[in-house]
Length: 266
Image (cartoon, rainbow, N blue to C red; front, side, top):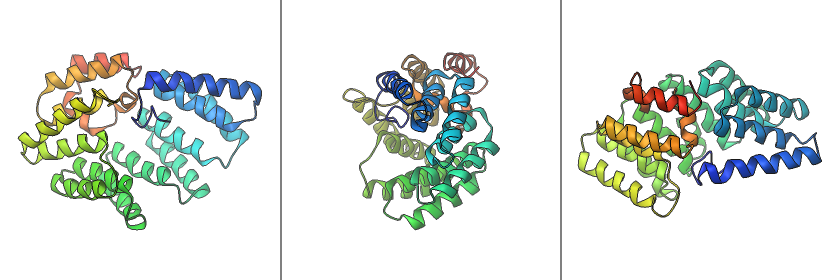
């Protein structure tokens, strides 16, 4: 789902995915993939938790070994609402059914980080990277967990490894900017922020990523402006407002509460 992973604007992706999945379900009500896709859209775009829960439950009733449905339910329904036990249970079920799946393995570390079990998250990502040393995805998620743990220099090294093994994504640039800010390299962090702004002129880049960089730079007002823009754009990253540590400095502010409400989290 390109809108979930930041490759395209959610408003361009999710309504179309919903329409296609609805048509597919009408043609074949037993198609588990259609139900799972509707569950993902209900979470990431509509924030309709009951409808999402019903859709995922139906998908897994139809196809009990469908690992993607377990993974999507874990990261889109359970984890954003703080139900980390259910999320990890679903990921364990997914991994049992598809032990080689990179998204499933990455999701385990992501959910552990959301649960503030950051040492376990790092260990999970390190195991994945040991098994997949050429994977930029594995290196990126390790860097994200290292940054959360306050190990900014290690995060930079992991990101350099990720970039060597694949193209530099906006998500990588944003985490690198946050790491540079944490190391006191404000000039480099601002350069990377400017790079993200330039990228937004030619392709979709999540406004929430720019908010995260401004938080790291100690500019809460600018960060709030970017979060407001993310809400305007129905940014899928806002699904994780309540659980991503990068947003912690803004919690409790009036502006953050308003974005939570606009994002369907209140």
